[in-house]
Image (cartoon, rainbow, N blue to C red; front, side, top):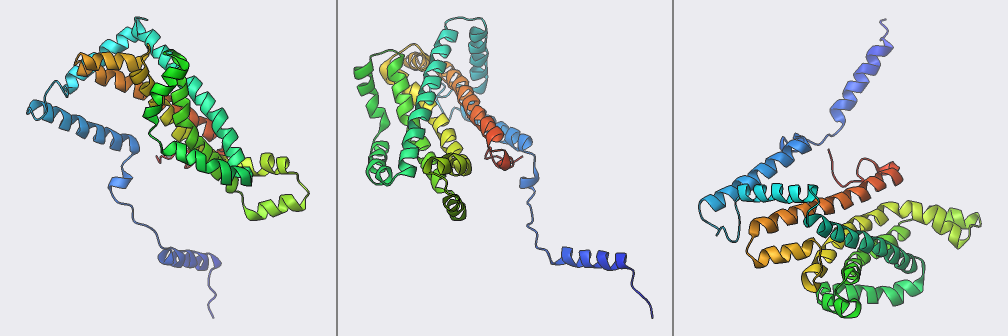
Length: 290
């Protein structure tokens, strides 16, 4: 009577498992590396852009060619590198963004804890926050100028105003994300409300809190630039307004692109901080897959 080899039995069992395990088919386009796919999308965008201007589908006054925009990008870059008049303007915008984001974090986190931790905050404060957030925020720009003047303060106020609500929602949602079993464990161990907040709710709610921070990082840039459009100032928003009034569309495009780099840098800083703090979610923390 023949006796089966244990190794052969294990291998046969492994093959049977592979045949029965369901795997999702990955399409060809999903297997393309992210850098390659982004380059393809960018090339297609520039190609359509160039074709639209070459065929005269769009007036060059409205839409410059990619070549003209590239030339102006180089000019603005040289101006910034040489420390000419654009560098102080960029620095003013950077200060507005940094101050506005810092205030938004302080106010948004405080209100988020109030809403997420107290019944009073959830029932009495949150409805007012939602009502204020549904209002057209651009309409508040003249009010901030009237209250705070034409200096940097009114731009910081508008940037803070726009970026605060996502941080409030993210913080409150994060505090509510704690597992019920963990809540019962801390209650059984006699932990105080403050200990439960610091040692359990905040760590477990960090992913949602950082989601609010990333949304706020995008909004704070829009707030600062909108404030410069409507309330004057000496930042990049004012340079864009002047260039648009003179129909210098390549300059407008190039300044907007440099501002987008500033916004990406702030977003990347928040994402990098999240990777260091929420280290157990490294695979999906940035919201992008390799």
